[in-house]
Length: 274
Image (tube, rainbow, N blue to C red):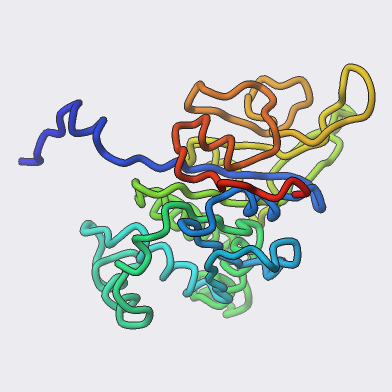
């Protein structure tokens, strides 16, 4: 029989914030690293776009393949005992990742993971999916885009869900925001990522969806801000499961996490220019 977790035990457990930070190019999403405590933050640099944080004093990882992205996830989230040893995120996969990268206890010092970006992770995943058996027609042997994209959705959702199981850690995925006009000439914003399944399911996986945007001011010029509520007047993607955030918050991820109940995640003195 599964052990019952009491309310006191549940409330005493360390619980990290899981969120997605999206925004258009050039608004300073990666620069939010400066607002986080460098000693307890790991920068997972998938995009190789770290010029804005070149002198940031924290540690980083640079995965360049989908297999490496999956290894990071299983080291963080631990093995899933329900899976066969030949499946991703299983005990067999976890043992292989430990042999490649060493004891996962080395990751224990990192309280926050900043993963930049989920958009590029999706591209790595799609490239990998196109080389798998599902990416080819069984009848003709030719590339099958439908099969590759179906596998892409499964892989990305499985990856995101497994990382979420690193309960004690704060995890932020960074993504690029696309803007388009729909058939009724309305502005529509959505996460830039290959395939539709990941973009549709992501808000249900994470706790927070935050858009970094230029918000129109009542008077004067527009200003940069975090948009945090689904019901915002600009139609930006946003969600606050905590209930602690206002519709608009200052564009400082460290301060935002303090408001979400994670004071140790904030940098003591982030540069005022970022």
